[in-house]
Length: 478
Image (tube, rainbow, N blue to C red; front, top):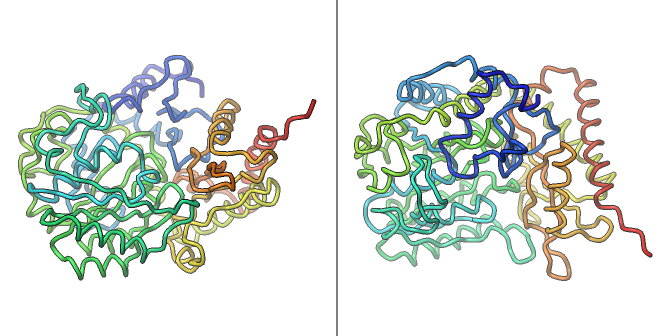
């Protein structure tokens, strides 16, 4: 579908879904795409980009077009019920909505107490660059979803002046993932070094390259040692997480972040935090600075201080959330057996095209020598493959990968953005690209036969491989 072909109602919905966020959501006026080359209308490009951002699917687009005008508060409350039903979450789990995964860091800080806070963040490079600001209680963009002008790095009033932060890397200097025990020990040092400050301990459940760190047994060890001195925060913003995993985290009184714009398949940007009842019950009043970030209905009724927030609507966020939860509900109806069928076919097609044909190397989503950990990951984690292309002619590096990624977009092919996780012998970061399935793609493939699915995946991977071959071909000498 071309942008110029949108009907009046489609154009209105598209415009709304590009409002109520920060600059990352704005479309280029010439190409009608945001800085991640995606848009909230069905573009029809070949995309395996769920690790970065999606276009909205045709079915979800039709769903939001049919909604019409909605009461913001009532609409968000209905979404809370649908999220709980989709994931099998208890009714006393509080749900806070936010315009992006980056904004969700503010929610965790608000839940942790009104005294000094120390935030132990894991792998900022693998969860999102803006999080290093928001996890510090500071603004991360030039504007908020309420269209309030801010300066990135400035403290959020009532919050940023009492938060300290440290970033624990999840990979070593060679790009190898650290073990869960190593991450646990680094977190332990952070907690001990925080003094009398309450510590937020981050858990990464699905980084940009599929890592899960630390594992549950190491999380339990941290809780046993530190108890109420820490609050667990699970970054599952990729949404590659099962209902069972969410239940495991909530049982440990962890706050869980999920966004609708990655694996869930909704348009960018939207997110929600699942807050366990014990934390919600003792939460302090929201900081004064939240008046420029959140709207009243985005926080559960009765949340301390939420009545001081602006009582207005963000129809763009509501539509983006509606599209995402529409996809979540469709996906959750599929059996594990049928989901596995699609994912295994995807893996086989990626291996044939990217590994056997291009000579790429699939980056393991676990530390060296810990394959059993990767095999134990939930099936949704296997919807993402990070491919090292640095062995291609010319030994392309990270900068080459950025160029290739953009050149693929120009050919109507969109993959996940490159990530620095491969170190070359000369010290440069190697070229990587990421291929990821989304919930709507799995639903669509599920409706086809084995032969049809394998043929379509084979054809699409062939097109991607052919383009990469052309873009990484060694230049002629002379």
